[in-house]
Image (cartoon, rainbow, N blue to C red; front, side, top):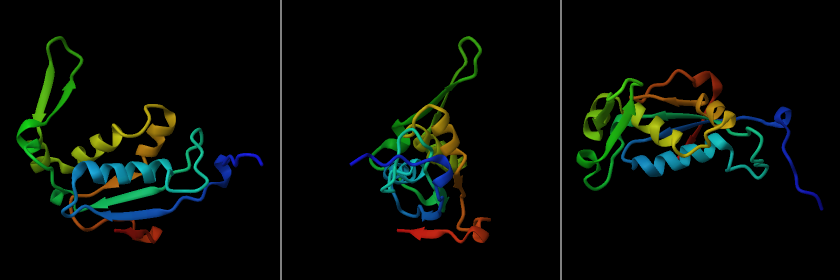
Length: 141
């Protein structure tokens, strides 16, 4: 018996909506990363992009456990000497909570062309409204 290998033309992508109200950032990011990669499908093939589209709503109502709001930082470098910037997660969650989820998901997918393509299928919204009703997304609990 041979192993099934999915081909790029045979992939059927679905749309999913996840409500982030009251969910922990990391646990939500794991769920989203698995859907973007296609690991929930029985025909998952590591070298083929077989993931789905994911819409995450209400990200301003996500929670971080423990003292992460005060102790966790997001660092980035501008490219100039000595220009390392840091943002505390309480500021990040207050001003740009969608960026916090995108960073968490980005760290959980591979750093290659498949991972970059998968990130384009992630749509994150602060509020409960999104503009993808025409795709008839499935609501995930």
